[in-house]
Length: 225
Image 1 (cartoon, rainbow, N blue to C red):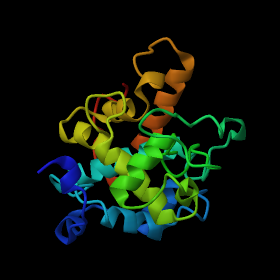
Image 2 (cartoon, rainbow, N blue to C red):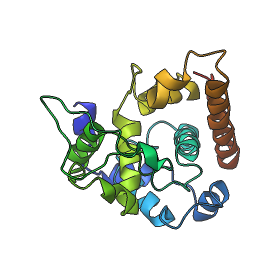
Image 3 (tube, rainbow, N blue to C red):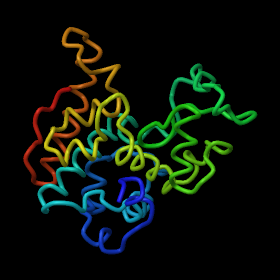
Image 4 (tube, rainbow, N blue to C red):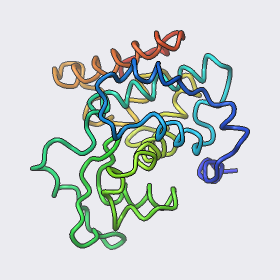
């Protein structure tokens, strides 16, 4: 069975196995999060994502959750960014080609925990989740569960500029740094002298370390990409 097919429908058994942090742990990780990023929306999205934090042993499940939330903390400014902060960029995420255009009047700037961006990403995420996000991209900023599901969609199925998804990278033992490569590789990885890239990598790692300590699990090295 392909990865996409395996992830297409929720599994009660997988949901029962998944590691989910307690509300107290979630609050401790994101003490300044905005109300939109509700604990309930997060838990429901995890329940609807078979395979996420439900593989391997308990330590591995906790490690994946720590890596995911560490990356999300960076991408969403610790769950304070519902929509991309820089409004001047909001019109810059439309790629028109023979296969896909942009819906009239819609903008595809970053939204949600992973700051989903670009028309083709909204289309792909929506098709996978069974939600029309191409014609209504702002649903990612209105529905907490949908927002979390788009982040998990990316984590589980999208390799970005890497050779494997963030989820697959952890399962293969590639380490936390490989999840950064899957999320933002060209902008942050393989730049050992770039101060901005180094700062962002360090910030991601710091959030990940905090989550790993809270969940009581060892770090998955290497941390950098």
